[in-house]
Amino acid sequence: MKSSRLKNIWRAFYLKVVRGDGSPEYIARGWSLGVFVGCVVPVFCQLYVAVPLSFLLKASKFGAIAGTFITTPPTAIVIYPIQIWLGDRLIGGNLTFAGIEDATVQMLTHGNFKAFSALGREMIAAFFAAGLLWGVVMAPAVYFLVRLMVTRYRAFREKRKKSRNMAK
Image (tube, rainbow, N blue to C red; front, side):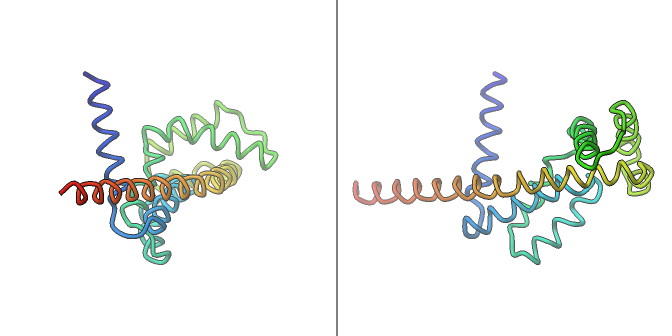
């Protein structure tokens, strides 16, 4: 029962993505933007960044919003400590994983910019360093994957439409 429910949720999500209005590039640009913002910007500020950028970059608003859900408070509790730890290694810091976890839990508990700024310069620098790395890697991958999904779905739908018209 659970697998069929999960399958139905996945199918509904897939159809929401591929049936979006606009060109495949427009839709993919929105999702890519949302994922990039989701990687780089703290969870409590993401929509404030993603929505205006979607207008500026002429990208799917739905995709930009939905793409930010790569990090939500439940996933950020796992992702952010790893992200900060990786960023700390990238910038040559010496933070402990336990300290990073504690600071991240405090930030997510309070969920505001003041709590984020309380992390300290080294943790904030590490957060953004790894966030940029994740974003630069994931955004292009998401762009090409979503564009491919939309293009294939539309080609399949067009082919099916033509075969139905020929059968009449």
